[in-house]
Length: 483
Image (cartoon, rainbow, N blue to C red; front, top):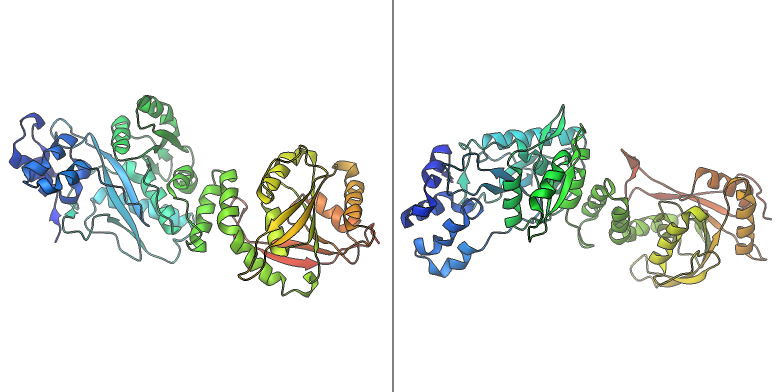
């Protein structure tokens, strides 16, 4: 049974003068707090722990700060010492390592106020349909629970309102199957009616977090200026992030925090974890999210889509692809990986020349002409399936005008690409505007060509769910301009 630490115990253990501290008082404080001692006690107290405990072999242990739990479900919140004048052995602010655990109840060892805030946060995130919560129980526990030196905090009156943001970000990451970044922390109150609220003892909390390796700390956006002023000049270089205020959706208010806390997974991690990591990044950083999609998800999406496309007879034998650069330019390398053409016409308008350069940088790294119009370059296509060989696609980059000239320009570029024999073309209508698609369907594609589009599921905010894409084949609606 875990030893109980309530308010009276805490005052008995930590209500001493640090300057006149006797060895037995150090021993009482360290043994009394157990696993929490290195998180909660002042450095001067811990520096004396090895000698006071007559444990010289573990002198390094007491002089080394513990690491925040960077394992799945790991979570931590920072709390202020509300009575530093009496609890003089406690730090001015201290961290409490926690763990969100799937298929578990809330721990009976939690401080009651902390458990109440956690339940409020969980309920709000469930109502907002956060991925990984539906149909599954999640409980908050102490990170040290189960250890021989764990402590029962169920009788400790610990003000915990400011832990709401940390608990929310931690649960988003845990439910997504991710691991938390131990250099990220934050503090913010939550009200279902008013959203994120300010916190007290900000500077002390920042100092405590920095001492334990935190290098990015999230605060309510109205306090960001004060927080930056507080950390100015600190050697740790703490970056201040902002929790969105005047936002009644907790997922949106804590989105930047959750995105920073979610440690980037690897290709060996489950697809669902990589997808949820991408989702958290997509909410706050579209460029970063695109990088995550291309690096972590594209190969799996392409493999699934190609397997289904090969089962559709219409796609057989088509080795000339026509595609368009759009703001969602990751769809270009996706189409190339799915259809693996021998040749590809990459079309773009002048206002998307930068995005076209991004595509080229991904497909064929190296300096390219600016503007890229007229380029013809080989692109290596890695195997989509195990055992498949790498192939090369000749990519032809051409520009076209919009407006009244669009149909004629598109037709001219497509005719030149198809060549005198007018090769059968596959038009990928997934990228590009609706107007471009209409022109390609009705005025450019010939009767023997093929059209395709990636159907997909979307979530709130038009988020395309990776893995839901399915390329469908269609015939042109009219005769087009080409024979």
